[in-house]
Amino acid sequence: MADRYELKYLIPQRLAVCIRQFVRQYLELDEFGKSYPPYDYPVHSLYFDSDDWKIYWRTINGDKNRFKLRVRYYNESDSTPVFWEIKRRMKDVILKQRCGVWRYASPWVLNGQLPQASELSTPFDSTEFTAIQEFFRLQYDLGAVGKMHVAYDREAYVSRHSNEVRVTFDRHVRVATRFDQALTTQMQEPFVCTGNGDFPDDLVILELKFSGRFPNWYRELVRTFNLVQAGAAKYAEGTTMYAGRHLAAPDVIRNMIL
Image 1: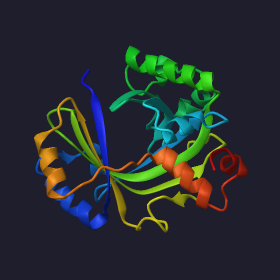
Image 2: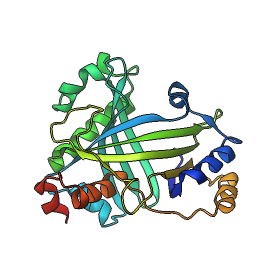
Image 3: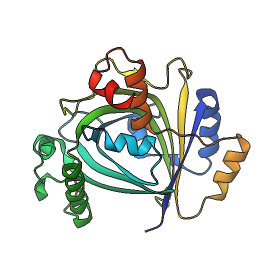
């Protein structure tokens, strides 16, 4: 499998509109965006961490080899899947493992029960089943449970020929604590990370994703719009912002990370 890379840039909405037109010369709107006019769709993730926030601190400290544990979903319909995901960073390379489970089965999977074949959202795939087993192993080793709900609106573009290139625009990134483990789209008093005193309301996170060789037209895009790479770890940075600036942040978070 080819190495996977993700390059992130923080840009204003006015620039995102121009970059969108550039990207459309090479990629097309992904299937989810087509279902949510005009372009973007909601993404929700429940991020897991230990009581002493080991996963958070590994990101903040810039550990070269680290991972995140999250459960990703897009709505609350029982007819849609929920994904148990491990996102690893091995130096500059991104590795993802995930397993899709039908939402109706998610409560008992959240309680540590491996899904039955009929509860998987795709025909049985040993790779996916291995992924959820590894998720459970890492979760149990850390004693990790759901901590933070991270949500945003995503506009994504993909190649019709392969999955080696993908460009995403993420807007309205918001975070809130989620200690009840509920996979809900509702958020109580979320902190909007892209709309506070430090960032304008229209801040967009642009991600250029690719496998193998850096596409030549990516070089042209970066040069044309004078893009400069920036950190944008939604879980870690969002948690820091929430704890430091949200009056409703529980002391358990403030005490651990401030």
